[in-house]
Image (cartoon, rainbow, N blue to C red; front, side):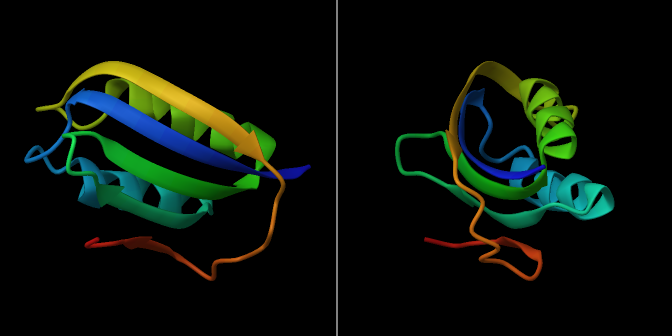
Length: 92
């Protein structure tokens, strides 16, 4: 079953290659969507794909790249929209 997740990752997640690594991980998993930094210091992600792959991606978000210190991951499940062709880093 395909689904969509709106994810907010907080902690030390900017300036640690979180966005670029998230893109690599998502693309390896066949997940589409986007990732961007938010002015409050968090990282926002919209991810679409198979539910089990999205769940695995969320587990990765709790760890992040080596320099990240993840404090929290909030997930809002949404209806799958088939909105994206790839996974991109957005710059506001």
